[in-house]
Image (tube, rainbow, N blue to C red; front, side, top):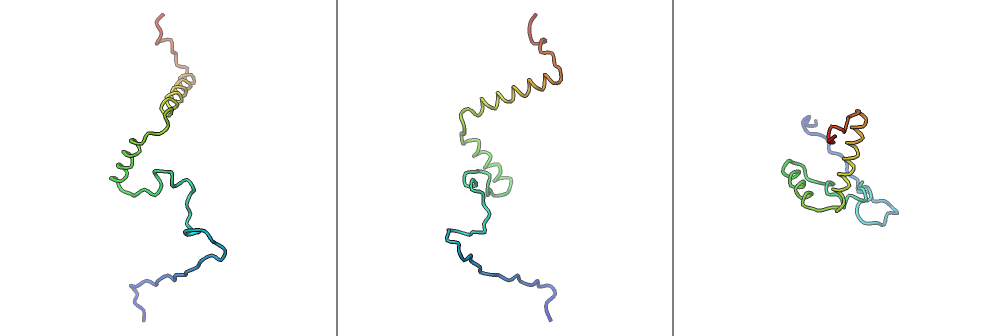
Length: 94
């Protein structure tokens, strides 16, 4: 009689593809740009997330990123003010 508290073990198969001549596991699903991402395969936990965020802040990226971001935000704000029909003449001296 089997022990009702013990679960049945899964079978393990050692299958290797016949025509695969590459390196590593051919069944591992990985994006080709994962090695360049800082957020891929990160460890979980609050401390690890905070330390990775600090490391991302220290790494300097594109030089024009801040300028491009500010231009896009300014355009979006002006479009929003135009849509809600905001009067910009209150900021000008008449």
